[in-house]
Length: 400
Image (cartoon, rainbow, N blue to C red; front, top):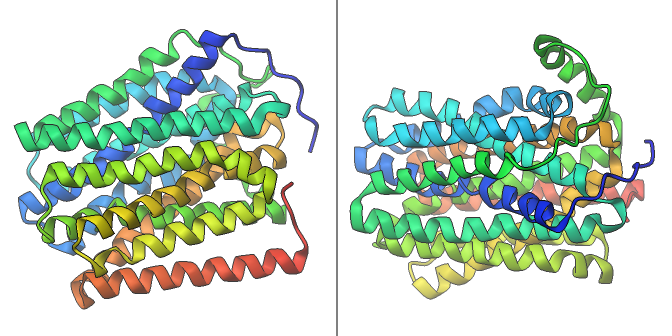
């Protein structure tokens, strides 16, 4: 891997816009995790169809994440942010107009890709703009800005749904998604010079260029940890609000509980760099993912607001600690010219978890009930995490 060249320094207003891209880029993914299950319950969809609809938002990013990352490298992260923000806004605005399962599936395919590319391009831009010496700090602030958006979105969406119905929640999501386009407009284009190729050449060669990167054991482990982290997050984006609704929590309270998760993500994002300095990247990665899996798996065992709120906060803390740590590990393992491609690879693993877990959970819930579905899923994820940790130790690998 070649050493990072020093990126062109961004001024304070431009750095603020980079953080704002996180605030706008990831946020639409939070309301859809709350609004779609509530929409499905309102329409009377069975658990298997709900799981499928949630999962389909990850199918198009799963198939197209690598080409999307390659497009960021070829055409620039800023340009991808512009178009993805528009797509995220339009698909959210259309959701209140539909009633059928098939129409929801179609919107999930299109909207999932737009929302995924929004966040992918924002991450790639931030990594490309961050000087190596300040990467841990900048990515922590970047993650914090995203988590603040994720904190506010469910609070506002829950209040709007409680007052004006599901349509108001989707309208908020549309506005928030479209803000990314406005944020990206003033940013400079900092793509690597000399990138060439037509649209079809870039997308067609993406897998050929990215898959050999997985031969790097340390990078492959980061991708597996990404998969496990987002598999835990997929639980709260699918059947977590179903449990809350069945337990009698109102939409406003559900929004508050989602805000507990995202508030704790904010704390974790800001704390990650300091915790890494006192321990190691590997310790923070494995510990935080284990915390997020175990806590969300325990949620169906309680209907107490205090207990569920505490478990939700622990889940968010684990997610918050792990995101900037994963991004820092990726930054150490990749060349600047491949940042978009590798973030696309990370998105592929993200979406694999988001695609598989809701489908499996839906089948388990329908066959065994909510509590056992959460227990089995959590045990499987913790088992895979333990196997990965054992392999890392045997190979004596580290990211510091």
